[in-house]
Image (cartoon, rainbow, N blue to C red):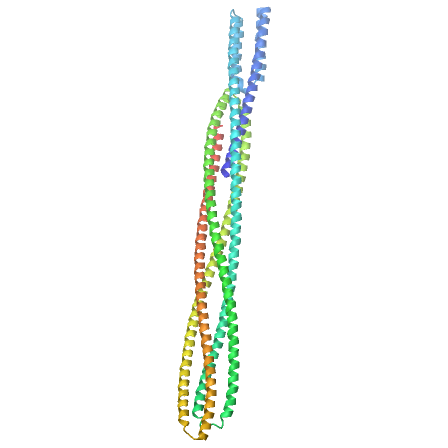
Length: 578
């Protein structure tokens, strides 16, 4: 654009100089016509004087002629400009010489020679007029051609400028869309962080529930201790048959309480199942959100690639424009050479016609015009510098925004690292809890085996007591009833233990499912890290492109300074030549 403006200014200056030169040639032609008219008047006067001299006497006529001729010549010389002083002096000398010789015999022949010389001068002047007219016609034709070429180049450059502006506006729109998408992605990341916080809260709740399960296990251990106490009571049953009824009532109350506790534990397990289902739904929602973020990232990558292609196309267009500007500058140089040649011809004509006063006035006018053009050029240069400063300020703001984005990405990366560490710690805690559950189950199984062995011993003792008397038989029947009741209690405890084992198995399965989900989340986190790495590479590419654009702007500034310097040199050379 700066080169185009400079070229347009140069073309306008050349047009003005051509018009001024045409005016000069027209003025010169008018002056020559005036000179021709004056010479014709002088010739007519000479013819009249010559006729008068023939009719009058020689002495009186000679005296009159000597008096009138210099007066007439002085009046004619007063009318002419300083530029034709030499020609008038020659004519005056010739005329005086002829007047002096008119006294003699060859007066008519010398007058004829004077007329012939005047005719030759007239022919030379007419030739000069014709040459000036042809030169003026050629200059006008060249000026018209230059005007047409300048108009065409202006139209082409305007079209190219409009195309570049449209591409720039489209790129700005795309950049705005990308910024909106980045804000959307950031909002999604914030939502993901919030969901992760919710998951952490759920994990804490699960930990609290696990602590409740541990309490249940502790209660089971207490039950096992009570079973041991019952074994002691079975050993002492023969001695404490009277207190058996009271113990039965106590045991029934305890069993009812244990049944209520088992129901409560079942309700807690059902609530845990519902919470696990809710967590699964939330995990699925997280997966869907992550898939959407991935698709948006892929879209952003595709749009970034298209923007890179468009930037490359814009750079190619700029190179084409630069080549066109160089060609136009070469054409202007050629036009300058032609204008210089024309200026030389005009200077020769001006030297021949000796119209220095008019040239001085015209040169002063040209100097004023050039000063005004230089002022406009400096104003435009200042405006361009202001625009370049604004562009640099915008680029700096964009770089700051990009740095902020990079810092945000690093913060998110650190948060992801902390989350992964927390996941690993949770997995370790789950594994420890699983090991504890397994140990408790093994202990319960060993206690059950011991109880079964003790029951077998009691049966053997009952068989030995069968051979006793009737009272002993009744006692044995009561003992068998108590033993059956204790067996029922033991079976109920075994069922409860099995139920607890099933719950532990379910919990282990749920833990495995949570491990898989955690692994899936870790995979998603790794994919997000890779996507962030890709975004960081894209940001680095954008930084490199920004650097290239800054270098390009500096190059354009240097070219602009060179053009201004060349234009000033050309103006100085032009004025020095004039």
